[in-house]
Image (cartoon, rainbow, N blue to C red; front, side):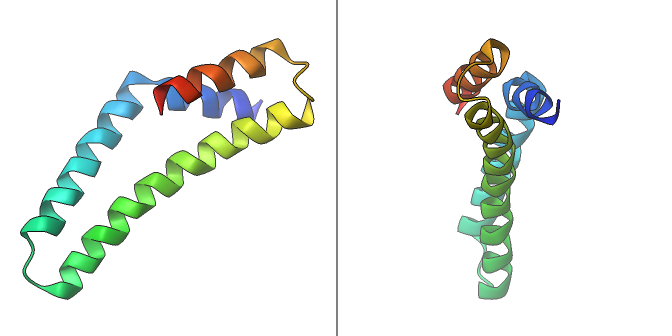
Length: 85
């Protein structure tokens, strides 16, 4: 099930570490930039990271909603993913 895979990705230490490093790198580059076009690019890249996380979380959340909270595995994955946000 795609939703459970999304949950595993969101809970993955590797995923979280990579996203944290990229986020820090993009923010640092944005702050250090003097060219407004490049700064905008860094800002958009940092925002895109958040969009990827949100899309994965939404996949998991929608599946849990469709099951009306009756699927224990989905509920557990959703709660774990919430804790990692």
